[in-house]
Image (cartoon, rainbow, N blue to C red; front, side, top):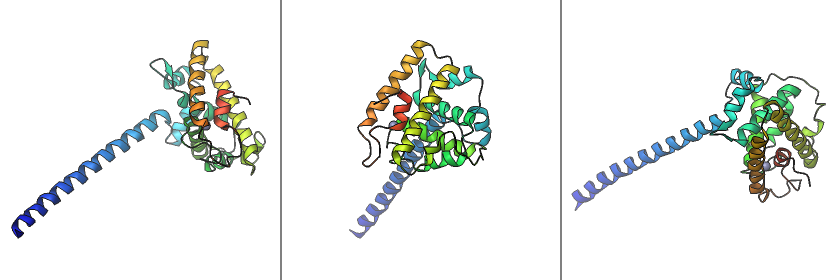
Amino acid sequence: MEYFLFKFNCVFNIYQRTAMKNLLAVFIMLWSSFVALQAQVYPIKTKADYKELATLTDFAKMKELIFVNNQPRPEVFLYFALLQGMAKDKLPAWVALSVAKQSVGLNFVPKCKICESTKMAFSHYATYANAKRKDNNAYPNLTAKEADLRHKDIATLTEKYTSELLVLLKFTDDETYKLQELLVVMRKQRMAGLPEKFGSKGCPSCDGATHHKD
Ligand SMILES: [Zn+2]
């Protein structure tokens, strides 16, 4: 009997170890595909990447990065629009950091793809841009304590920067329509999930990106 128990334990241990190894392998695989996917959408990982992409004037190349199979990827479009706009306006890095830090639930809606993209742009800009200006004249309310004031500036800035990139990239009417259609769907999907005590009736990034007015 003892021998059988011993055997059983050995077999069970081997089984357990193999199962753990398999689980770990699956986890590593999922994690690396998630990281690879993130890098495809938000490609800036170093200061050199930032220099190349945030101030990229080769708009044909940027369009190639945004479109996949002739379909615009709204999250990539937003990411570039925000980065380009902030770089052009020389938004101080500390302001961008303040917006990104008050992230989910305060400035951005949880699990909202438009918000995620906007937040990534603020965060990457704060990390990689060499923007040491002290004054914050362009968007003074981005760092306001009052949520509704911050949100208004985030919406205005998102609307301005996305409109500017559409013009720079020379989107055709058809491409603009496709992009707007996708953005409107994304906004609607997440509007239901506004956090309690968010401070605004709408999502600032989503309203800005879709030019939504109450
Ligand atoms: Zn949103």
